Amino acid sequence: MISWRCYASNAPSPKQDGGDEGKDRVNEEDVRGALSRRLEQMSEESVETGGRSARKAVEEAGFGDELKRRLEEKIAGASFRSNNATAFAEAGLSSAAGKGTRDIAAAQPWTGDESVADASLRMLTDAYKPLRGPPKVPGVRLPTKIDTGRASNPVGRGVRIASARDNVSAYAVTNDPGLSEEERKKLRAQLKARFQPGARAVPATVQGLQSLANERIEDAIARGQFKNLPRGKAVERDPRADNPFLDTTEYFLNKMIQKQEIVPPWIEKQQELVSTSTKFRGRLRADWRRHVARSIAARGGPLIHQLRLAEEYAFAEFIENPPKKKVEKLNTTDEAGQLSQLTLTDELRSFPMPIDDNLESQLEIMEQTFDDHGNVKKPTESVKITLELPSIPAAPPPQRQPTVPPFRDPVWEATEGSYLRRAVDNLNSITRSYNLMAPELAKKPYFSLERELKACYADVAPTVAKVIRDRAMAPKIKGVEVVGHTPGGVLDKFAMDRAKHVYDDRKPQYGFKEFWRDLFGAKA
Image: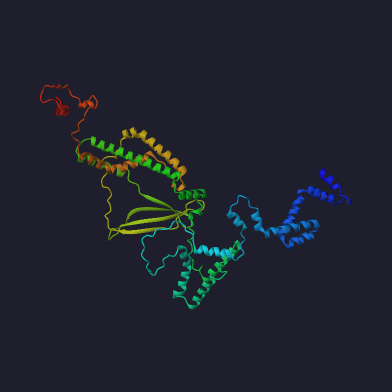
């Protein structure tokens, strides 16, 4: 900055001569900054490449005569280099460049007309082509080809694919009998329009593509191609989605479980509960059946007396502990999403009739609904179905009373009581865990030892007679020999009880046959 101020303050004196003016010009060029030089360079480039408009802009900007003169000199130099580019390129080649590179640099650019020298060289090259390899030895002459009427060069797949659309269109125009003359004219006009200069112009912008697509769609609508299109299926709505008695979280969890095909935890707990209860009841019935059969058989007597006693016990059990009536309840959801409960009760009813005593089976179906508060409404209607069955004689009331009470054994109950109570407690704990997980409609009641024993007595009593008969008729196993343990190992079985003496002077001599006889023969 100090040097700039020093030079700027010392203006050139008008009394100096020409030599002093040249020195001042050189000093001014040294003092100019990079910004001034860059602006001058940009001005020169704009004048060189801009043409008349750039020159006019330079003149209007008020540049000095010196700058104009230098710009014009540069423009003239650039024009001269452009007109004599070949000479400058040849002169600028290095000494290491080859002849081919120099010929290419010295060659004249293509002007659109072939020179006489180039044409002569081309004709000579076509007439006398250079050999590409060694001369071929003449071989066996192949037979002359016969014209079969087919093209020797098969048409490529690309050509066939490109002409497939035109062939189909031409066939539709010429050979379709269902087209009228007007439709044929329209198709011919469309085919002709495809070969026009602007027929296959594709827009290069997004707006152009959108307008082209809209035009195609409108043309298709005008031709009626969007009529009678197949509609999609109706959306299936789950009626349980609007059920007020079903929790939303529970509903979505059930949907997720169904979609992922996994088993919910309460289903796994239910399987565990069912398997445990089945094993407990099966073992209880098997133990009680075996105990009753052995107790009756232990009293002795003929088999027929034992069977009659077992039947008397079964009859007394039937009178004392009759089987319960089966009632089945079904919980369903109607189309409106309301919960309904159907109760099915099946029983035989007899009506006294003077002419024919027929039995009628009456099936009563009642539907119960729940209100908004979850309370059961009264059944609005009840459907009764009565079917006439063939005449069946009514079972007479029992004329006799059982001669023995139902079979019970307090000693067995006391012996097995601890196990049974623990098993029932285990089942109740599993049931409690299951009820905590399961929904309200799938919960199960708890187990009771007294109820399980009564059900066991009622189920086992009719089968005791068959068990006694099977035990009596079963064949006895005979010929069972109990082999005790003998000292020694496996190799001791092949040992001899006493030592054998072998003498070389005896004939015949001791051989493999004698060894085998002594090893597996009868031991004394």
